[in-house]
Amino acid sequence: MANIGGELADGVERDGQLVGPIAFKDAVDVEATPVRPPTEHSAVVSALPARLSNGQQLRCYQGFWVFESWAQGVVAMHRGGLVPRAGDVLLASLPKSGTTWLKALAFATMARRACPPASADHPLRRLNPHDCVPLLERPFATGRDALLDELPSPRLMCTHMPLSLLPATMVDGNSNTKIIYICRDQKDRLISLWHFLKRNGLEDLSLQEVYESICDGTCFAGPVWDHMLGYWRVSKTDPSRLLFLKYEEILQDPANTVRKLAQFVRQPFSDTEEEASIVAEIVKLCSLENLRSQTANRAGIQGMFIKFSHDSYFRKGVAGDWRNHMTREMGERLDSIIRGKLCGSGLTI
Ligand code: PAP
Image (cartoon, rainbow, N blue to C red; front, top):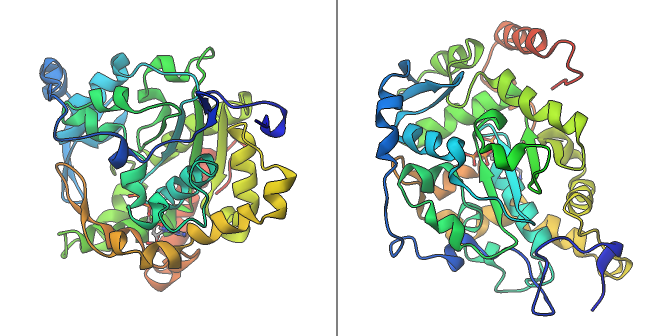
């Protein structure tokens, strides 16, 4: 069997067969997993600063705002609740930065030998991308984190948490975990978030409220600049461990991102794969149009405490939509806050 690109990624081969990540929903039985709520952290959480932001009760843990319903699980995860494995790949983002797209692209790329992107029964043709790649905080919040141990290698997982709240074993210098971060223009992210929350039960939420929560750093997973900077700095000091992507760059050249991503997880495309247009097939499979048209993405919901409809993850998928909703002054004020916070880091968005 070929050793693709010279070096075979950890966890890619099992019993002589090339394998990829298995869709979360196919690999585990959520209902059958024993529940062990992380109640040992209730005293820690009840002592944390609290506030209501964009219709959600939040707590501030170690400088970041997290859903109160997730807070005990976040503490449990942070304090070492997840045992990393060789071959783990973790996707990270602030919500509405392109997470769903990145999940699809990374899953399709890593799983391409076990599930060719053109195959009719590809998991992304029958499951929502969030059912293929688990968000770490959810099983931790519900005490079902044992599910993550059940996932076969190579594990592909996701988080909205900042780097500083991940288990130290996943992020310290000796960790084998590869992290792919995606960020997006905060003005477009804000508009996307506003539409998403309105679509999922907060019909009366004002744009101004969401806007102010991003400007003053109190939105979920914020302050957004600290979230981005935590990942950005590691991508600069250790680029083999952290790949930093921008939504707008993927929009411009998705094929280039797929190649970059494959290279990063040490599964570069072979000449044979290039000749067979596998990259283009992955891009097509993961396009907004294709994903939106799948039955699994037109119906159904996602989430444990908070429920989000599958179709609400697919809206316009463009850069610059903020101009249709915000004044130029609002845009300039937010840009200037973000620029000031990122100043000197080398990161521009
Ligand atoms: P999440 O963090 O809650 O998972 P996320 O996927 O980051 O959400 O955000 C959804 C945004 O990604 C939407 O942007 P919009 O509101 O500005 O339109 C959605 O349209 C966009 N999106 C989802 N899938 C794709 C895709 N395949 N290609 C491009 N953009 C996408």
